[in-house]
Amino acid sequence: MNNPVDSNQDISNQDIDHSWDDLRVFLAVVEAGSLNAAATALGMSQPTVGRRLSALEERLGTILVERGPAGCVPTKRGRGLLPALTNMRSAADEAHRALAYEDGELEGPVRVACGQLVAHHLITAIEPRLDEVPRIRLEFVTGSRYVNLHRQEADIALRSRRPRSAQLYARRLGTGGFGIYAAPTYTGKNPAALDERERLVQCRWISTPTNTVPSVAWIERHVDDRAPRLLVSDSLLVLEATLRGAGLAVLPTFVGEPNPRLVRLGPVLGELSLTSWLVCHGSVRRLPRIRWALEAIARAFGADARASRASRSLEGAAPRPATPSPSQSPSP
Image 1 (cartoon, helix red, strand yellow):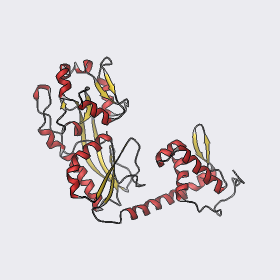
Image 2 (image 1 turned 180 degrees about the vertical axis):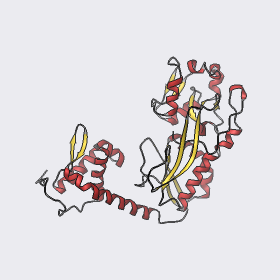
Image 3 (image 1 turned 60 degrees about the vertical axis):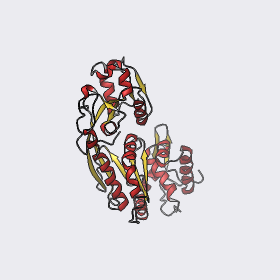
Image 4 (image 1 turned 45 degrees about the vertical axis):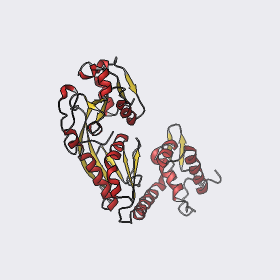
């Protein structure tokens, strides 16, 4: 670092007319606590974040972040910049919203953040209506990373909790259930699947390794350790493996009930449920394309109860209980 500024010197009169992108990198590093986490949040590589932060410090002539084994911690000088940079980000976000949403027509991108199974369900449910709005470009953002609606990382998000921010609009979709599902090809070869107790010991169970997911946690609590398992990396692979007859899976009812290639074994699991919220920023909720997407998503989940009334579970050919509308949870 060339000619570092003394820690007691005010840098307010220095040349800090730098690109907002560089300052945003510094702010992301401080908030994330590490270069790697900041890189993930910004969609950059870790070396790029490190280089841009170092270049910013070089231009300012001062160290903004102390890097160590425990992560990145802002220096006194860096902490002094945070309030102004936070305000800058809020202003930049507001300007971006004004530019991005000035068009009031049914056209343009609509980004929806949700889980993989929800995206799979919504694509199937909404596809027939897309011809009504040929100029809307619907984009699904899936994954485990939290998406910040204030920073326009998405336009709409499906969440399992009501947001606390007064700037966000939230619509409750309902509380949805889970069931044990299988393909008829699997139950035909494995009659133990039809017995409530035997299936927990003799059948193969498909899941991801993450036991914080409600469906996986249920399997860990109830399925015998001797039962064979098939572990896959994500929820879409759980669904695909189940459809191909590889075993049993605990799936949300909004996935299992409408699918004619799956049968539910027994009643909906009473101990599993998730409440779902449809969320967007309040400043965009009345724009035509956002309003269309919000209604289309709500209808996609509300329609599943009607489909379930015509479905049948395999045990005793008893009718599947109708799922309250709109009760399907889009969190998995």
